[in-house]
Amino acid sequence: MARQAERGEITPTVVTLSISIMLTIWSLYAFSGAGLIGPLPGLRPVLIAITSIYLLRAAAFPLMLRMMPDRGVRFLMWSSLIVLAIGATHFIGLFAE
Image (tube, rainbow, N blue to C red; front, side, top):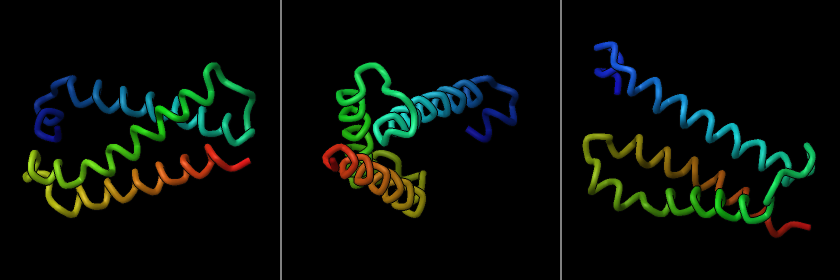
């Protein structure tokens, strides 16, 4: 991605913007689920889907090591731990009432 950006390609910008928009929407759903903002459409099913995606990404760590060895073990380990923590927090929030 860094090399593509250095060459002036638009792909890294589009990918980064897409991810940031998605994470912003997911954050809004988390805030809504926590009662910090008003309810959003399909709140519980969307939160279940978001939680599942985070936890599946964390669980995919061994597979990602095999598929993307060039990314480095440290990057994959830390990013997996981060999404595991976020997914676990969402999971706890889904069942806390």
